[in-house]
Length: 360
Image 1 (cartoon, rainbow, N blue to C red):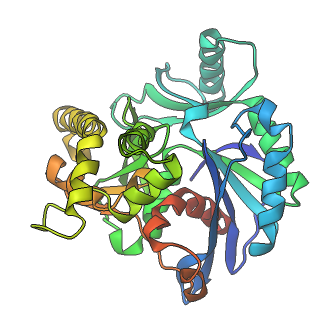
Image 2 (tube, rainbow, N blue to C red):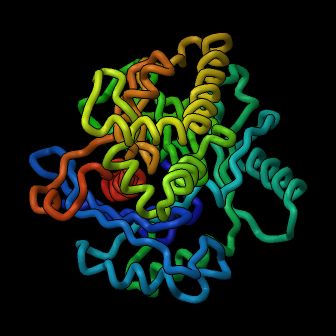
């Protein structure tokens, strides 16, 4: 199941998945899965930084930079079918209380509420799903995005020679990303997934491959952490990201290492973001423990830009007193030589989008 804002073409089946296009706030991540002996793995993946003037807005996309970027990367991948996703920073994610009714009636009520709360007359596309945290079924989660942005993304993929079938978003993408980690399947047991992005930190609870709870963690995005480290050490943001990936924070299980001096500097500079993140996750877990104890997770899976920080999972596990692991997926051997395994977590969303190619 997926939250699809725009369906453009029928779905096909093949040995490879669709081309997954994850459009963030600073870069575009592309990934394609392949099926080998019944298991899925990354056939190829690439990160494409935005051009200097590029922004994730309809006006910026009209200049054609996304179409040119996708066109240049297309030869790396097989086929023309694609699925796109956008950063949660350009979506309107909220919970609503909607009276019982038919799907058509509820959709009309949600549309009316979105229009009343909008700051402009821009058309909106949205989808919704029931919030499992309430027992009477009156609460729903809604994910909306401005229609001009969806149109520009569809036109950019078409101009690049691709057929965009779905613009997907929200916790369903996180659920599919977890399912791809077959060894992490936890039948009947809740799993927490944190997409620790540059502009948004999004936490979801997954049970049997379905999202049952979702929350955006306020002021917990990883962007300020990167900026604080880069500023504190006199680095560019690009070099700051590389330092976080290479050195990161200290591993609580290691007494000392050659890298400990740099890691101690990083942990001091990143302390505020880690503390806020821990507090917000703790608050969420306490809420679930009080109101829906059956949804308290047995583990946390970390993905997105923040997951590439070395030892981030070990630090969060200690702070949260909860097992934490990073999202991983097998790679085609030829890909391993060109793709940095330290950054594989960046492609979780793009891989989940590619996986839509096998859904009926």
